[in-house]
Image 1 (cartoon, one colour):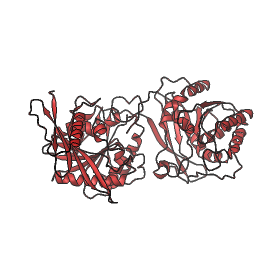
Image 2: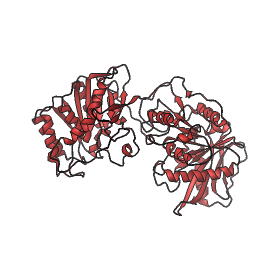
Image 3: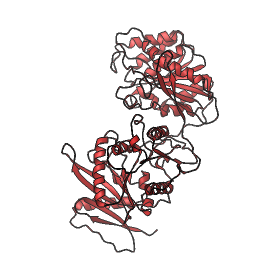
Image 4: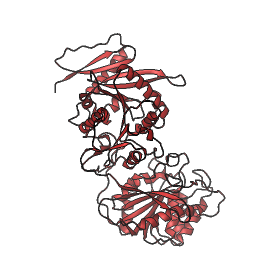
Length: 571
């Protein structure tokens, strides 16, 4: 490939910096006009960034050149807003234009998003060859770090401004929409409110907060591209399937021959269609041209990142059904299973407000690598579980185990249901939980349930004063552990940490003393302060992985085959 030279140009009504890649043999000209010296520096920097090869870019995806266009307008409160668009260069007479809503939260279009992060960016050169102009819309100047879902109304405003500009610039050319990652949900919300019938292609959409959204009016216009083998926990394949099924949207699977080995999102990962740029470009071209497409691109055989099931179970004597997620490890069962009880959920949390499914892959991964299946029952009112969620308890309640019993009433039927599944071994069950769920686990362990061979308490307890950090009524918590220790015969592992915002170390140790003095057996691990709230130590598995492996060996489970590598998550 011949060397290239950036050529910069100043455009009139809108601020623009155009970067064209020319062969070295071409005449070099730098059109600066009346540009401010600072703008010259910015444009030169932009050119250097854009002609630098992006790491990890597929060899069959030619790098695109981009023209930057900045739009200026007023927000509803009168504040000035600027919005940068990146237009792919080299499509003199496009057959279609795709406006892509950026997924990142900060305006940083040059340094980040155009460096092969989004599949739309990496495939832009290929799409240009197919007569499709890609226009990448950055976060507006007033985003202030808010995610696309948090600022969905402003995103709709920005999309309207960008669409108006593009309709004027490409008069008569059909305009479609695209997204990647967390821009998918607000993009579909925007399209639902717009007139006309533009197409939209959503790649690896984050639909965790969209389980109750109604997009059925978009049926026939929206295509979801999902990667079942991607281990990006922010964009679960199940939710993409759910949205496609419930809203009657087309779902195209992007298949890889093997699932990812590590957890992670972003650049170079399967969720961003790394290595599938050519079939993705072909798919987009076929969809926009109205041609028939297959229901997959890539490998003809689909692989899955997680062997995952979502099921419902009934509460005996009540007309209430609760939701539970079950994940199975690799290999053939029947598998031992860990049932994880979640902590208290804030009323404005995603699990309450958006009915987001309850699953914690940080915890799940540690057990799956040990060959242990993982179940996440959601108590009433959480996720799609029916009933009213009760968050607070009486501060004057002298019954130390009342809250634990109430929570256990939602978990016990899940345990009984799991016993009946042929892929699970009902004689090798582990109960675990965090915070209020850890306190519930302690109570469940005191019942000595058949088949339960282990119990793990992550920062579990109760705090009756309605606030954090105070120890006013912590003696009730100590008494609760003492009462449970009288009947608990299952060996337990307790994982706590220093600087717990709910329980001081003195109370944690007193609970352990009361539990063991009453006859219970528990190994207490107090992790040193790691710079974070110790109450959430369960999200830092490197601090307790060795203790978990030792404990699982003590209760008769095999050692893990490998320690999971962790890729940095982003986007």
